[in-house]
Amino acid sequence: MNLLTIVSIGFLILEATNVVTLYFFPGSTYANGVGVFKAWDKSKADPEMHDFVKYLVNWVAGTKLIFILLLIVILYVADDQTLILAGVALVISIASFFWRLFPLACKMDREGQVEPRNYSTALGGMIGAFVLVFLAAVLIAAFA
Image 1 (cartoon, helix red, strand yellow):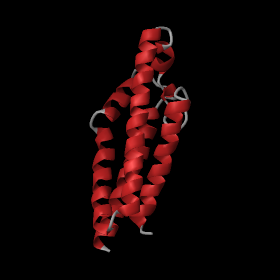
Image 2: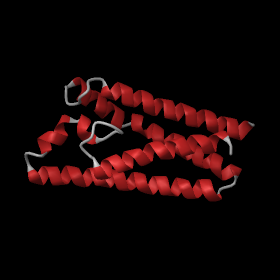
Image 3: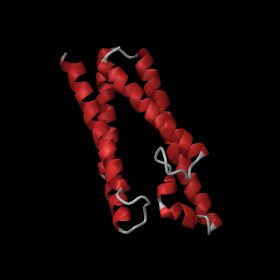
Image 4: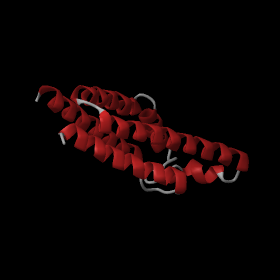
């Protein structure tokens, strides 16, 4: 088992905890549950809005589940070259967080819409670390 496979399995485990949280404990403040956003509790005051928010949360969970299951299939059947290409795809897709989601999380953090404060910084650091670890694993796999 190479480093890229090990890093991918670690990512799968992390994402699986997030999917379980979003499906079964969406209001949690752990495992990237949406309970960190004050709007989650505010939406409960408007049943129509809360249903919409729950729909979006479940949509995200479903999308993550698709991502996880496809990665499991890739890890199971792929040759080394395909694993490297999948690793590049993961780097790009995970890094896309910094295009739209991170600026929005920072804005909400600045405006006091997130608890705990500086959640966006911690989340950005964690996702940035994953991007760097995946990138390193891809480069090691490609040039080793």
